[in-house]
Amino acid sequence: MNSAHPHSDDQALTSIEFRMRQAGEWLKLPDGVIETLIAPRRVLEVSIPIRRDDGTRERFTGWRVQHNITRGPAKGGIRYHPSVSRDETVSLAAAMSLKTALMNLPLGGAKGGVAVDPKTLSPAELERVTRRYVSEIFAFLGPDKDVPAPDVGTNAQVMAWVMDQYSIGVGHAVPGVVTGKPLALGGSLGRDSATGRGVVEAAMLVCQANGTSLEGKRVVIQGFGNVGMWAARLAAGWGARIVGIADVGGVISDPRGIDIDALVLATRNGSTSVVDCGIGEVLARGAERSTEVFALPSDIAMPCALGGAIDKDEAMTITAKYVIEGANGPLTPAADDILNERGVIIVPDIYANAGGVTCSYLEQCQNYAHLQWDEDEVNASVVNTMRAAFKRLHGFATQNGLTYRSAASVLGVKALADAHQLRGLHP
Image (cartoon, rainbow, N blue to C red; front, side, top):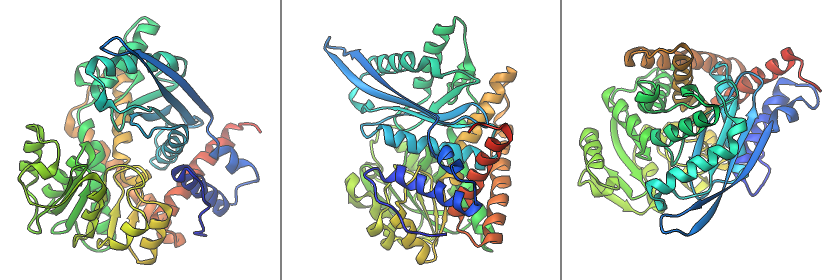
């Protein structure tokens, strides 16, 4: 497939539109169909005025994007981060459309967010932002319409407020309006570990497909939030050596393998960064140097932080043979091209981090049935879904001589196009 990339100020949106258009051309979709699939179905921009704890007023801007709802209710996280914008939210919603389609989940793709730094808000202010945001997008939401989940800057408590604000509007408790909730409100066991579990499962499967195993592999991870932390714990549990970890504070390393249990304990006891835990050797300090983790001698790299973390310069320094995208869009198209030319195997985000949306779907199923499954059952379902999807992805990529990213895009777009055609959606 052609690798020339158009330029745009919003690289993530341009990139996913380009990949969808490439996939449509590969599939020889009729004129106009691919443009219909690329365009978001609905985009809502809302104003979020709140009163600060000191009595002053402030206004934030939020978005909710339903990219594709042909195959089922929209599904996608709510992100609180200063960089949130319309185009970023559209690009993330489009990725969710491809992700749910690739994983064969009966869901569409959505995303939401507020342009705010949650670290600057008190708990009470965070609750006011959330409740006002939900009030503004209320008409979009519902278990059969659009089901949010946590994302960067949000968590189970924020989802509890989303559920409560929506429930107030309809007059009764509606646990199924959101996933990633606390267990006490109908959340699912296994949800915290699901995305990291999927990343590690993807790593195991791609190793197996190439005649090796995860055991003994040297792994570097960027990001030690929920996804990176669980990926580190689970990979170490399977016998991998975590030789480097980076977060906003900098990079730590230990060629013998970082003690992940000790690191998790230190961060839970108040350390704000891995570099302040007294574990491993501190190689660099500062968020701008976190990508230096990829230059460490390694076999597998797991970027689990924010999008666009790896560009051309970083791609040239990566030593790993496999890159497993735990974050959404961590590789720029230019980095993608460089790594492909170098023979590095990339497992794309729309597959590699799909453990999270898979578990969210299982949470929806539990809410519909008024049941709670045990954690082993949930984890097994996540792993089985990841394995079935990898079998389809690897088989299709091998049969057609495509990279995993191109194959994933084609399979996702094909599922959307098939649903569009079968439903007879005009035009």
